[in-house]
Image (cartoon, helix red, strand yellow):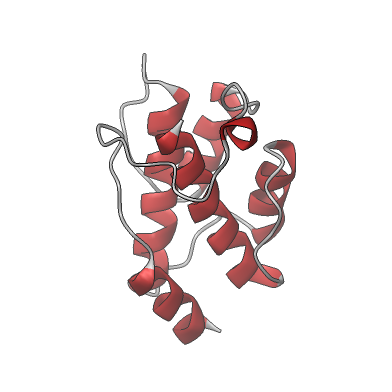
Length: 121
């Protein structure tokens, strides 16, 4: 499963919060009005992922990008996280993103979809 997740992440484009990308297949109506998840909850998920960032005054988009980057780096480096799959699934549900498969693979793919959607917005 770890090798499958690493292969998926190797194919996923990387963006930082300063980049804006073409929305591609996302319709404008699919992009909504922004993240529904609170900054506090995103901060908690980021901390559970093992990331160490100064989060004072940052935007929710930055927290989401950092979370996706940390999850990606942890999978690529085979590092354990305190962040659980169910927590990612709950985030995706809150943000109306369908899991892109089952289990950890689907949750990680969904997180990357959410990141792309929010950067494109």
